[in-house]
Image (tube, rainbow, N blue to C red):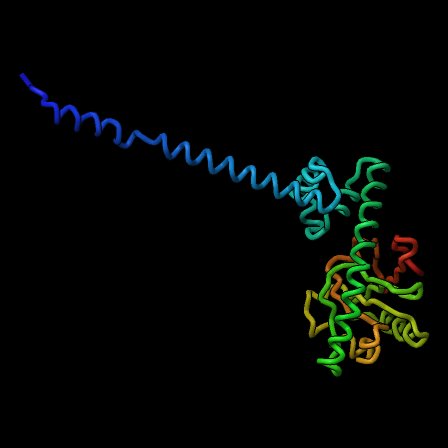
Length: 238
């Protein structure tokens, strides 16, 4: 007959409880982590939607669109343009257009104020070097004679048109399509077409990387494409 002492029974109980089959604490912890991550993602999406003036459902639609073919056609397209392009009705399309115009108007005011400070600082520190704008947004015209101009290299028509416009005293925000964020490339192009440090320093000309902006404004080849902001809306000038 086998006899179990009190110590043996206790050891057997501990082995049964702590054996390889016991995993409840780990399961509870994993579920809690998943729940916390889901709440964090939900809060992040809600904050992003609010920043763009969108509802949670609209932001969810944007994320769905960006996980489909749109991510290959235009992977860096902003939420409002994405939703506007993929709108199901004229009413939706108008809503996103108005949201974007208001948002860009506020941004333009802030960027213009900073641009003035930036240009002044650049003129003091590097008077002989052409500055390339670090902001990726649209042009911020300060008067009715200012244009956003999209160009590419090589493009003889772009060069001839720019020289003609500059000779007439036009104020231009130039966007080089296909610059790949290469500052040296855009400076080299500017020197080739005859843009001077004085024109940049005075604010008559700004040099910008396009970063897909020409697509969002509907500019089509052949370039150059010239736009002007009229009553908060970008209009192409032929």
